[in-house]
Image (cartoon, rainbow, N blue to C red; front, side, top):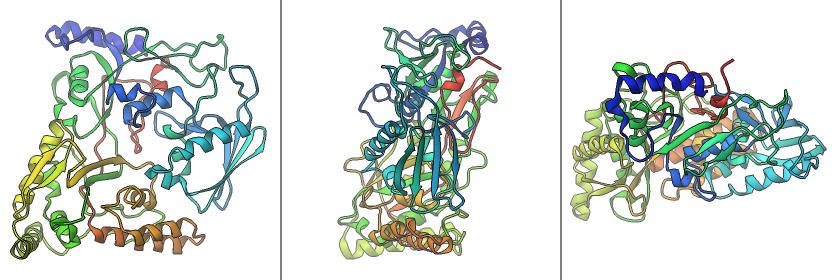
Length: 489
């Protein structure tokens, strides 16, 4: 990638030398800048933030992986089939050896995969993975995964970085993370003999930086990187859309959860679901995103998008019969009624990202809540806040993904136990229509709690200078690093 991407960067540096000073030892152009927390991304025990997920996907391997367009591609498994009932996924592994040149068997991979799944027990992903009934090593090279009910996009879960494993330093399918003594990450081709089956035999080192949103965008816009990945709502306001950067932004058409979740509801104004609904009704979702200048963004009042295969929920939005002004009037009366009976309502606190995107969201939210008589304060610390921003891309198009993230095991302030029980029942229900009806009923119960206030789809963007081989926008917002290291075809 270096030869065909970085040449334009040097030209840009000549054309605009005043942009070259970005501080520290970051003057040399690099291939990719990742938005994220550098310390967490390079840690062995940090959370799986987007930067760490990108590095993990490049240096580990799942049964299957994602390609540059977000499609499923071979990983540890060279091929697979799905049975007609959708309950069995059968994978044929490629021939692999470990560092001691011992053959890696299906039972070895089954054990590694089971261990990775166990690590997700207390997470929303763990609830997704509860769909797995059993994992079997059928032969030395064949693994079968049985599901409790059909899950059309199950392979998307298997391709995630949390289930990727390392099988040894001699794996030709993964890259090697190295800092070369500088502390800055780069990905290297594996040290293997030059052979036809080494996909990285002509790859050059992939030089990277990991920076917070503003610094990452500035780094790209100063001509020091060919690609920026992992951009979200907090970094978008820093992007300059015109001049030399016209057309550089790439928006992924993702879906998922983007809105406010209740952090606590034990007492006070937020203890009443009707009061929480008042906040949801008060928000002008169109105006909320207007400062970000995102064309085609569609607001929603629903937790689960319409038309998903495992839900029979009707497609209409909430409060369709009344205007925004009427919603805010109704919400204001609820606030006044509570204040008259229980006294003044202290200002609510909301945890938002620390950057310019968080500033814009807070300004609009504070205005909308003021319209119904509520004060709003901002914090960057979720601990102690009343509300916090949820911003997560869906990995698969099913209602269970959305409802699992509002499960009582994950968010006890935004959940409904009866709704959780229906989701669990639906996962084992063999009849498609009955399963969809259970999911729709669960969604109604969880929505009625008003513990999550949806805004619309998450915002994900990349910045790409010119035409880059190995990059493509996609509905999952996944952009693996390995294809960017390969020479152009």
